[in-house]
Length: 274
Image 1 (spheres, one colour):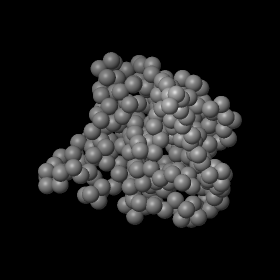
Image 2 (cartoon, rainbow, N blue to C red; image 1 turned 60 degrees about the vertical axis):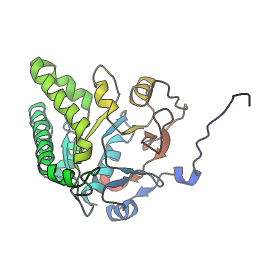
Image 3 (tube, rainbow, N blue to C red; image 1 turned 30 degrees about the vertical axis):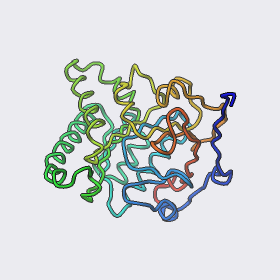
Image 4 (cartoon, one colour; image 1 turned 135 degrees about the horizontal axis):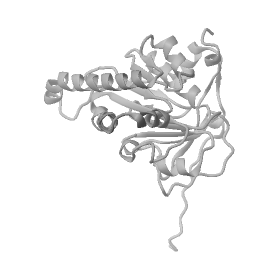
């Protein structure tokens, strides 16, 4: 009656224990779910959609990304994944091992891949015209099509490398990425961007706002929490181990109150031939 109120987010303590997988078969068995979903923790399943991921060095971000991508390429309806890793580091070599030629590690090839992905999206839009006309309020899943995902690691670093390009070319790249984020959801064409910190000077606001799934792994800075989640967000001061973090996703956790979660530790990723 006095207007004071509290919100408690409760988690089973056992659900916050990090599971370790030494074998990829056990991991895929544990993560098995709908063709258009993936599992991020013992209790949390998310739809494939646009995703923004932040994590500083040692947060477990690269392990997390690789483990989720392994889920998506081992489903009955396999996702079509393309990777841009400007650091030419672990995610690039994960792509070399698992995606054949669908990974690049330099600026020029990154631009080519963005253009190619954008063209694929427009081609799918054209091909699905009659389907959407005959099936109102549906999306690519009803057509039983695979999700197409463009993963850009160290997005801020990549975008910063475009500074020397002509302004018209830089604007063209930004426009295509914004179009993918804006119209790709119904078509099943998704953008996943990962970076150590989220800064509006490097990552456009209109792009961040289209990311339905937002994840921060490990301990991060207040600016990243506020820019990725909400200006009013309040994150408890916890000492998070690698693989622990917060996520926001519609109907599960709001950007004002992101949810704490722990992703599994896929030890087999340290030995790709395990």
